[in-house]
Length: 300
Image 1 (cartoon, rainbow, N blue to C red):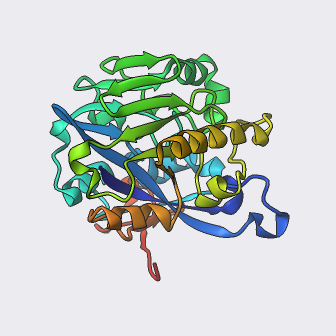
Image 2: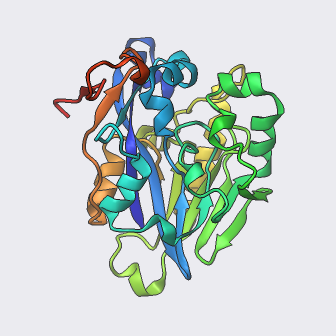
């Protein structure tokens, strides 16, 4: 298992804990945008693909695809680097060795790197998620699902209906609630490597549980607009039940402390900081002086 970080989102706590008390709702967080590589027979399986960097770095595109979310996006530099390629390079793995891509859901911080694998590997997603994201473009865009991230005729879609074994030891489980077809992943470790791990397996929640507190306190995550956020607790309880029955650990998807710590446990180097984009800088086509049009983060 190789945890990855493709960037960070600077956002209010309410995005991960929509029912948190009002005095804490606007507390700012710096959440990692995660990915996960799983070594299987024949190559690597990638879970989630991060952000579509060109849509973040250009102010006009940022305004279209991020402006309504009130989120600043931090990408590892330099300004012309691709975060997915950079994360793979830091982990010492060639993206060409990926044999399958699993997408937890269609939010733009999870499916933005799919373009790297279109026409190359099968892409696993729940049929319900695909249908909901493509049925109504206006509704989908209000939920941060954009066709530009995935609408490529070369994509080799493999549509799933509920719980499905992707490969020996890797099972997709339906954890709907955060989105209608959200899926999480249960990973069983090979007996030959269990001795190197504290747990014999893991449940990777993805956005069915953003933070550790979502798991520990069964605190709801966000559901689509107009839905009751409390419906997301069912998926949290399901993951906890699976983990308890097998002695596994549930890992939240965006926790600022847990995900980097997990990478450190695995001895995996990940990006620590980058450049923050907020859509306010001069578009590249109006630049008169070469150089980055963004600001470097500090104090992280």
